[in-house]
Amino acid sequence: MKIRYLGHSCFQLTESTGTSIVTDPYGDVGFDLPCISADVVTVSHDHYDHNNVKAVKGNPVVIDKEGNYEIGGVGITAIRSWHDNESGDKRGENLIFKFRMDGLEICHLGDLGEECSSSLLELLLPVHVLIIPVGGTYTLDAEQAKEYVDRIMPSIVIPMHYKTKGLDMDIDKVSEFTDLFDGSDAEGEIAELGDDELELFRDDITEESTKIIVMERGK
Image (cartoon, rainbow, N blue to C red):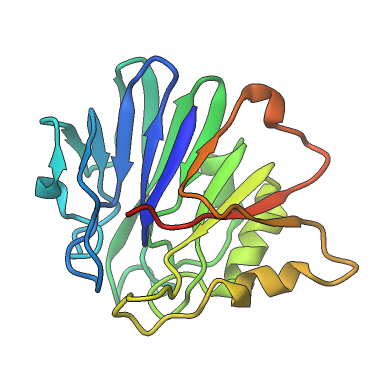
């Protein structure tokens, strides 16, 4: 399968069969969403920087409610969670999406803001590839994100929703998160991909270590 990073919390996930999913397409965040088409669009919550469905071409199926789905051979599970750590009182609900693609379990946490709990972890596991917000203010911050990584123990972690050039949001840079893995007692290899696309195979998955991959935004 292929993962393409389109910026902010938006990714294009493409299975080897050709089925394509776009997550959380954004509106005006300081830069433009690339021209993209998909079979499916997932929306974690109804905020302008996550719900620009009309910008995605191809007449995609839109999933914005919790439940289990299967589209084009891809299994999709939408899990209800909170956008804040006050049971939604500040920012409402958030949908976490799990995708079963080419034998891999990919989890996109959306704008998750609630603390890591055993009850939520039971719904998420297993996870091979974890796509996680790390910028704080509106989502998990670096420390909270690291707790999710430590408890989920995915093979690959892809951070999202952090401060990048041009982004009109007061959130932290990705370094606040990656720096937590620099200590000698911290497990996690960090890779600056320097590209907007990553291709993964089932053989790439190992339970022995976690790799944090920072991707470039596609334009």
